[in-house]
Length: 115
Length: 113
Image (cartoon, rainbow over all chains, first blue to last red; front, top):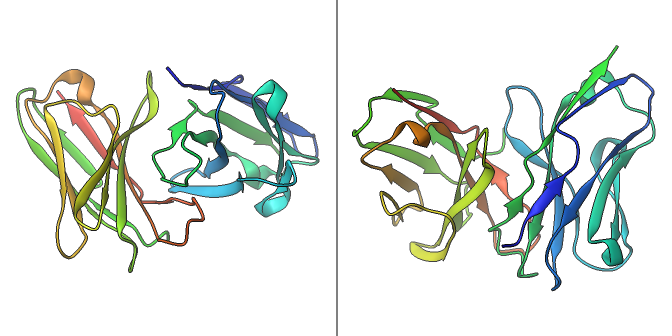
């Protein structure tokens, strides 16, 4: 079955440290890729997305992600994290490439940033 | 605020019971999605409705059913509840612009005792 793997369950960083969260998916066809974020006590919201074109996509709040098709990966990065980035991050894949919305989510990575 | 409203926010019930979760999508959004989030399974897609019609089905149990009404709000019905049904149930909606962005509600936390 198709799946999305997020390698880290919980990441703890100090402010100003660099961040990279891994995401791999198992599907050989066309995909749309997403990162969603859930701040404490809030709803899930879109951080960034990749449909086609430049494999390096930029999102809100200084986040970016790189799609590497050969590695089936879509890792999330941020050069310098802030305390306000403390949240849970979910990678998601739309298998059908048609923005149907029935996304497959990874299990999430909890990021804790120490001030 | 995403514009998606879910009620109730919290619900505690007993095994064997039936509950109904309600979702109002963002104004103008025709598609509604239901997801279940549990500690062991993560976020799992259950079902999608588009303008009142079932559009896609995921890992939804036969004990669960959903519908979307003419005013576009949706209800998820969970029956013969088991302990393992305890989870956070999210509703999301999206428009027709094809951006692929889902707008999520804050979820309904169901506890089955």
